[in-house]
Length: 264
Image 1: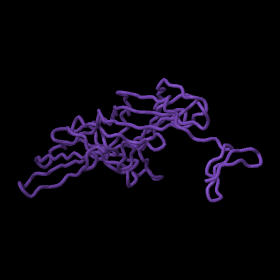
Image 2: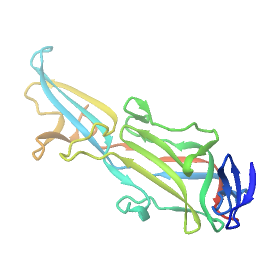
Image 3: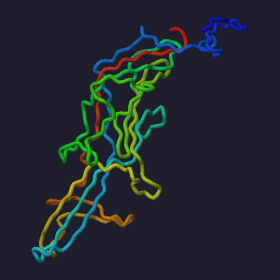
């Protein structure tokens, strides 16, 4: 290793002819004396827009003769939507920035963040009694109750089947902001659900009754798409409203260290 100065007087550290450190380029330094600890800090993701896919059929039974059956299937799903900071263009479904109340030293433009968090509110379906997504538990993308190093001060907390949720810390105007985003894949140009349009849960209903009697499972026709959609279900018919509450809350401890390109 060789210490020296170039013709401009810039201090250099070189090795093998390569410059390893130069005072001509501002250095990137953590400022541990300005570290921030957030305890019992909560990050809230609100409920999302939902819809359903509906199937109805009517058929004759051979046993007992003279009767017919009706069946319906409702699949709840999250419809296409984008939520995020209004300052980043998400005015339709805003998730407002949260100022954590701390200013960073001049010259700091990066945050080193560690987190130990747990999901304290999990989406739940009030009608079907358990939170599930397709055949899985509601997804979570990290080890709960363990210390994590957040790459770029960000963490994706939920991701599966066309939707995801994430948060990140960012320096804006010298202040540290928490920002959130939740996204659900949209439909294609024909209005059809894409392959990843997420079905959350499925309910099945069946009714057997005498032939000629009026339908028990109400239905109406959607002429614009030539398909059946539910109205008010009766008897053992399927539910026709999205009962899932997709609200999530994460709570934990965050250690945030500002990083600067010049002395603080």
